[in-house]
Length: 95
Image (cartoon, rainbow, N blue to C red; front, top):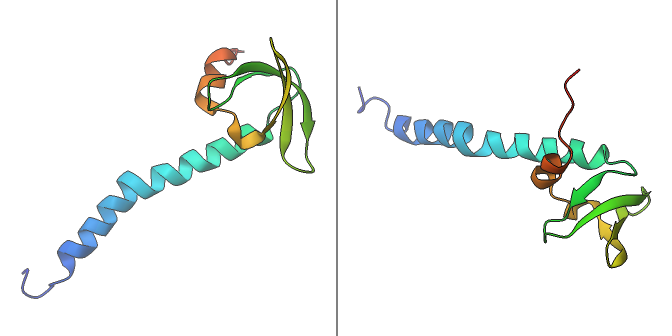
C-alpha cells in the first residue's frame, strides 16, 4: 500500500504537526487577543517582565496602558501584559 501512496507519510506528519503544534498556538493567540481587548481600569496585572501593578489608564490610539506600581506610573504596550499571571491575580468568580 505504501508504494501506491509515496507522499502519505509526509501528509500524516503535516496533519499531526497541525493538530499538536499549529492549532494550539493559534488558539493561544486568539485567547491573548481577547484578554488584551478585555483589559479595563482597575485590573491587577503582571507584565511579561514580572512587574506587578494596576491598570490606571488605557489608550486605544496606540494600544498602550499606564500601570501604577509602587515605584510610580509606567506606560506599557498592552501586549507586554502576561495573560497567565494576571489571571492568577484576578481569579474568575463563580456565579
